[in-house]
Length: 96
Image (cartoon, rainbow, N blue to C red; front, side):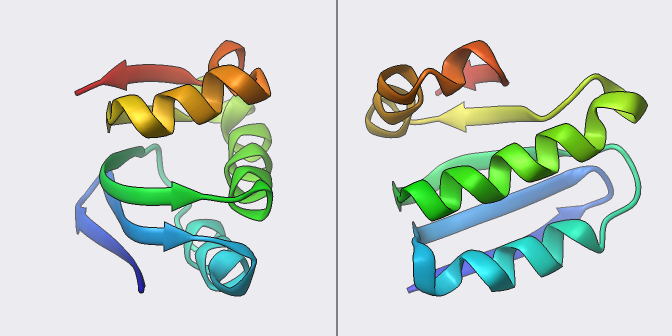
């Protein structure tokens, strides 16, 4: 199961498992947001390399506007994935 939702202006929440099956839907959703926003990952259980690719593409798109992607409420498990992949050096990350 995967859900992505605009909670309020500037705040997007990802829930469940962001894998290759869900990556296209997540990418379309994030591409549709043209204002500065942060992503709440407090309920994200899993992220695959395809999911990391979606976040990287979004990050690159946001660099000219807001300096890149900010991830908040990142759980220790998901934060470990960012560390192992080196993505912790790309994104601004706030752990939970």
